[in-house]
Length: 141
Length: 135
Image (tube, rainbow over all chains, first blue to last red; front, side, top):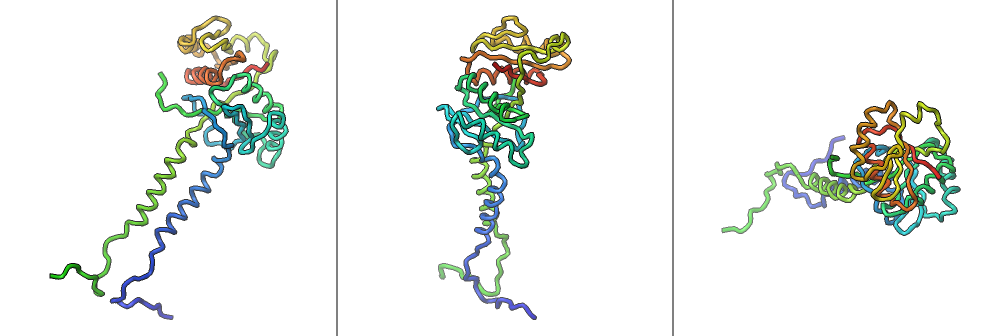
């Protein structure tokens, strides 16, 4: 079967949809890649800055302590009394054995609150803990 | 004089179409601008130390204990140290320590930011594992 070719003197009158498809595919890929990173609660948290870079690209379960004292496990806001059970539930999910638990606490929060979160995380079964920081761009002295 | 030269059927478009490439690049730039603050999150790995753990003489000799009393005052191995002098005190201790393990305890009223900055300075100076003392 022969392909039908456009006559030489015919103008292209259709809309070129190639750019929009390109952009849409790029957006889909970006969303697929960034989706795991966005699984944190939408609470206001001013993370403390640090030079140390550990556990950056590792899958984790996060505990967020906001400036207002609200607590969340990943993207779910929970009460202080629910924290241990919700976290234990997350850690029991398939694939979460030995997963890193990251405490994202506001820089202005009192240390006693962070210590309680760390204690609760341990009690819920967390084996590995980390404290989230914002990467400092300054060179350490 | 004719104002506009019309495309003739015998002439092709020979220039490469750069529009899709520019579209994709602009989308990438926007995504990067939005995602940069999120990806700059990092972390400091910590363990929780229980009181009474590792009580051997050798373990006690090689580990470094930092106590944060308030935002400006610390003790390192029970010796008072000013906050500004922490790094100069820690460096020789890490050089002499085999394990470079650090145990940090912190007063309740100290801010989380201060606590993290002490951990960070210890890490920058070469701390190995950091354990946080529970209550």
